[in-house]
Every structure is written in C-alpha cells, then in structure tokens.
Figure 1: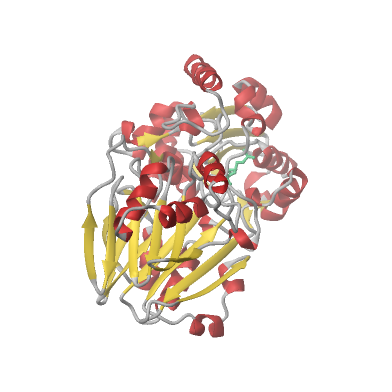
Figure 2: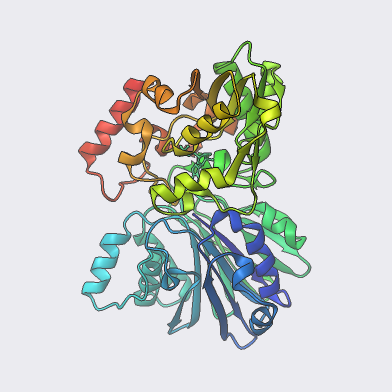
Length: 466
Ligand code: AMP
C-alpha cells in the first residue's frame, strides 16, 4: 500500500508535501520521496529508504524548490523493497520532465511490461508503476492528456495517481475507484492526498473526493476536469475502512471512525460474549471497534493491551520469525486489568493468525480466566491484487482452516468474526460499491496468477462457507 500527496500553486510545495507524507506514514514505511517542480518546469527530487522523518533533512527540503510537488510513501506490493522502486517515478519525457506517484496495483503489469521490454523499453525498477510511464512516453497521441489517456486505457487494476508533466499536475482515479484520493484547497493553491488526515495537517479544506474514473489537471491555479475514464462498476476497497486508513480520515465519503464503531456494534450483535468481565481492543486499529462492541453489549471497556508506538506495523517486516518476535515488542498486557477475568479481545482482521495467537498466549500468561476473540471483519481468504499487502493464499489461515480449527490454533475459548453482510452494512451506503475480494474471492478484475478455474473454485468455496 502507499500514500500519495500532491501540491499545486503553493510556495515551498515540498515543505507541504513533507507534512502530508508525515500524515500518510501509516500507508507505507519502506521508502518515501518528493519531487518538486520549479517555475521553469525543472524537477528537484529526493527519495530514500525508511521513514519520512529519517529521509528528509531541513537542507534537503530547502533544495526541493518550486510551487508544484508530488510525494509518495511506499511499502511494496509489487516489486521488492529497494531504492530503485521508491517513488515518485521520474522520467525525461519528450513533453517535459515527468514524475509519477501511484497508490494501487496494476493487475496486468506483467504482460504489459514483457511487451514493452520486447519492443525495446529499458526499465529502471521492478515496480508496476513504471509501466505507466513507458506507456505514456510511447503513445502516438498528440497531446499529453491523450497520451495519458492512451496509457490508462491499457492498464487494469487499481490506481490513484498524481502525475506532473512540467508544471501541470494530474490527479487520476481508476474507473473502479479502489483507492481514495481527495482534492483540497489551500490559499490560492490546491493539494491532493490519499486521505483527508493529510489535508488537515497542512490546514487545507477538503473540496471533494475524486470519484471512480475521474481525472483532472491543475495548472496556474486552474482546475480542468477531463472527460471521465470509460465507466466500470465502482469497487471501493472495504479494507481501507476496516484497517488501512486512519480513523480521523474521511474515505469514500465515510468517516473511518464511524465505520469502525459500527463494525464493533455489528460484531456485538452477531457474536456477543455474555458474562465476560471486560472488552478491550488490539490497539490502535481496533480501538473504535471495541468501543462499538462495548456500547452494544454493555460489557465494560478496558485498556488491556498497551502498544509500543516506536515499532512499525508488524506485517511490514518480511520473514515469519521477525514477525513473531515483533508482536512481543509491539504489545504488552496490563495484568491488573486481565488477571482472573473473562475477557473479550477485539481485533480488526484475521490474516495469518500470528498476531492473535501470540496475543492470546500473552493474555493467558497475564492471568485471564477466559479469552473470547472477536474480529470486526470476515476472515481474509484470498490475496489482494489491488494494493493491500496480504500474503499468498497459502499463508492465509482462513483459506484452509475452519473456524473451529482456527479457534484451537489461537487457543481461545470462543471465536467470532463479523459476516460480510454485517461488514458492508457498517461500511455504509450501497454494498455493491465495494471490493471485498479478500473476504469473498469475488475479484472484480482478472487477477495475475490465478487461472479462471482456480478463481471459480475459490469463489465457490466461499459461497459454501457462507
Ligand atoms: P494475524 O494475527 O497474523 O492474522 O494479523 C492480524 C493483524 O494484522 C491485525 O491486527 C491487523 O490489524 C493487521 N493487519 C491486517 N492486514 C494488514 C496489512 N495488510 N498490513 C499490516 N497489518 C495488517
């Protein structure tokens, strides 16, 4: 997953972009970059591995001159974690220097890339986003707008994009609208960000969220709406609301905090834990869910686990042993709250089962009498091909184990996860507008490494297990 931020028509654009990236750090912690564009249309770039505050010094930021900027925080879903894959991607395109920041994942990148390489393209990275740059540069269309359109018509999958060509800033959302992107106003200029929390940090006022298939360009303080991309059914990523986005953001027109409370409320209705002494969250992503659960069930809300905030997301470090050790580094139980009690633990999602299993051992060790685990979303059964870093199907515990097997594996007295209808109800609005392929295996596009028969089998298995 990634976070993107763009600025147009504002002095010291890179400084604003830096703040924006700070607010989007949770969307990617592997690398970050800012490209600014000065009055002559010349780019100034800095990219690095690590966290935003480690990458940019005050001197570096001062060297990124200009009133236009695009910026990116990354963790890899396609392509490995190396500096060559850090974004924004840059190119010396014949219409002017080009910089591109991409959130999402292109599902046909492999085929497009093979074809481009056969025709002589030389790639500098292994990321799917670079494919877009080559497609734009190779288009025979006459204007940059049409060249971009040409490229977009060839790619499939998820893309929210910020792109500069010289001083023109483009903002683009794919026709299914998998990933969020919001336009905001600041002084005489504009900013764009994956989440509204990044508009808040720079003091920008949200204007509107880009709708699926919408694209626009901004130059010299003027916004031009371009004709929408060919229509497809909207497929907003429901996992953005469950886990990925920050609760202080508004995403897909919904307050993330409101959705998470409702997920907790639905969970308490579907899977109450009568007789439990208290309920607490796995902090921080499940905090609002535990609140909702406590409200509906009448169970006392507690802080049973404390999270160390100086550790990144456990998932992001590759390798199972690193992950296991990191759970202990990241969480510690509050013994006074847990000892001798029957506790309900609420987490947002079940992925590999690693975090939950370790947490349960920790909670039992702290003296819990009973442990009732509740997940505020259905179990993840299939990988995401649209930009969320979920593991291969074989590593997803729910793809091959029944609820009872998982209960035993986690070592809990009872286990419950929210149904898909309950999840979509809490997500608000029309349930058909969401992508929930990670839960249902109903992928809205052809996916890269599964045959249609495998997909159908996965989808059927899901229908049976409902
Ligand atoms: P596990 O116990 O191994 O199933 O992991 C579940 C935990 O991982 C939950 O606490 C989630 O908040 C978190 N999680 C879910 N999806 C992701 C993701 N794509 N990246 C990082 N963490 C995640």
